[in-house]
Each structure stands twice: as C-alpha cells, then as structure tokens.
Length: 387
Image 1 (spheres, rainbow, N blue to C red):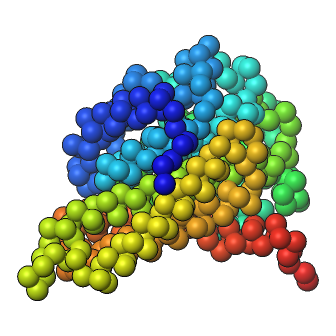
Image 2: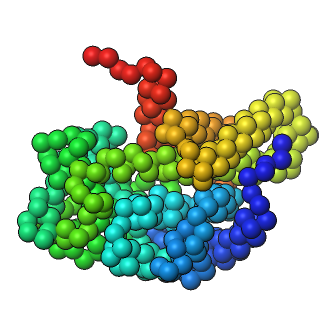
Image 3: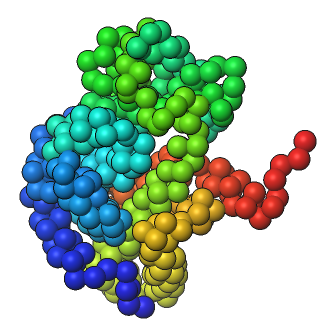
C-alpha cells in the first residue's frame, strides 16, 4: 500500500540526507564501530549541512520548520544505510533532547544554547537512568541541593547515550528528596563543570559506534540559571510530556530497520542457492517473507499516523507506547527470521544481518521496556494496579 505521509519537500530532504549519510557516515562506520564512538566533527558537519535543529527558529540558527516528518526521513535513511549506530547520536540530539530546550528554556537560555545546538558545537544528551533503578525514575537518588546561585549535585547515571561526546546534559535530579515525582527537576549540566565526570564508554552487545557512558556528580556546582522550567519540581511532568515523542522516534527507527533487514534478505535469498534452487523459492521462505512484509507494511502505516498525530499535537502516551512496543518487537522478530534465512552466513559478523541482529536487541529496552509500554497501555484501558 502506498504511503502518503511524505510530500515533495520531504523526499528532497531524503535525497540530501541520504547523500550526507553515504558520504559522511558509511565509509567511516567500520572504524567508528571499533573506536566505540564517532568524532565530534560528525556533529559539526551535520550542523553545517542543515541537519541539526531543523525545528529551531531561524533566529537561533535553526531551520525554522516544525515538522517531525523530516526527523522520520532521517531515521529511515540511517536504517537503510546499514550504519545506523554511527548516526544515532544525531537522532538523539534532534529527536529526543532538543524538545526540552525548545519547550522549557527561557529566552536567555535559548540565546545561550540553541545556536551551538544547531551548529553541532554543543552536543546533547539526557541522563535519567541510574544504577539499580531502571525504569523507576521516581526512586532516583541523584540530588541537587540549592546553595545560593548554584545547585550542588551528587549522584550517578548510567547507560547515557552521547555520554562521552555530550556537552549539554539534561540531568534528572531530586531537588526535594522527600518527594517522589513532585521532587524531580531537570538541570542542564555543561561540559567542564567541576565535579562532573564521565566514566567508561560502556562495552555493549551492539550499536558499538554509539558512545554510551556512566556519569557521576560529586559536589558538582550547577548554576540555578541552568534549571529547565519556571520552577523546581516540574521534572517528572516535563519527562512525561516528551516521552511520547521519544518513543515514537524509536518506533520509526525500528520499523525502518525491519524494512532494511527484509530488503537485504530478499536480495540474498534470490541469489543464494540450496538443493539446486534459490533459497527464496522454497515455500517456507516465501511464507516467512510474506508474513514479514505484511507486518512491516501494517506497522509503517500505524507509525505514519502517529507522526501525523505528533505534528498535530495529538499524540497520546498510549498510542506512542503501542508504536514503540509493537515496532521494536517486530524489529526483533524480523531480524531474527532474516538471519535464519541467511543460514550460517547470518552468524558471520561480515554480513549486515548479523550486525542488525545485535543492534536490534536494545530497542526493546531503551526508551521504556516493552513491559513498561504494556503497563502504560493497560492503564490506558482503565486497568490500573490495585494494592
């Protein structure tokens, strides 16, 4: 079924972004996978090309176009390239962290930060997860105690994407440790802040080119002027407001990754022979590929409607959770079945499907696990937990 989400401007953008990915990411991705990180110059190159801060008003150096469809195109092209992990930091920068700056910054903060965000000189990260608490954000122990014109921040965060490269880190803290949700605030901690240190670049199962780090804060003094929002205690509400977009971003990438895996496998099974005929000619192969193509097609159309809803300001937490849960689980099923259709070659690292398999596993965990997504959906059905 023909997709109707995109218009000519988006397809023009697609061609430009595809050229950027093919030139600036794909040739270097094997080395970045070995390094465990992309160079900071990738962000400044993306910024100079107009691929950062597309929705930031032009007065701050952005593109001035508030249309998530451009972000969706970028995600699709990254997944199509087979070098997605090297570009995930850009997606996090644009899709997930930038909205906090646009929605909650004061005019002074916008003037101070947005130009660098758009140029790529200020790389974004967000730090919510702590060791031992997983999705239970209300139980976080990182504190920010007011001391004159500064907060004194103590605590630790883990699994932080762009954790090594990040210059502006939105950190979830407890400004009132006696409270749970209502005691949470968001602070922007800047590179070079005394008492703010980065631990090791974590060695992951997949997505090796994406730096993922541990962060620690030991009496780190952060200016009160770096608080996001008009007052303390708004952090949980700010996170809740932005999580649907984050989860939709993950869903867009997941279904695009599934499509890329299927396309690559179709080419393989048409050429690879067994028992004197192409692997794809066997009924089992045809049925498996038919099932995957159908499920991906259906998922694409649901996600396209979610993108439309986001741009219209109507995307709900429940609908975003459905998209994130279904599409990441679909991605896992598809890459697993596609690897199986490759036979023993699918287990070899030199084949793209092996990398796709390793990279896919985390998508059912970050941004909220599948189990948390089902919890959100279940509560949306009026099935809240009773005690």
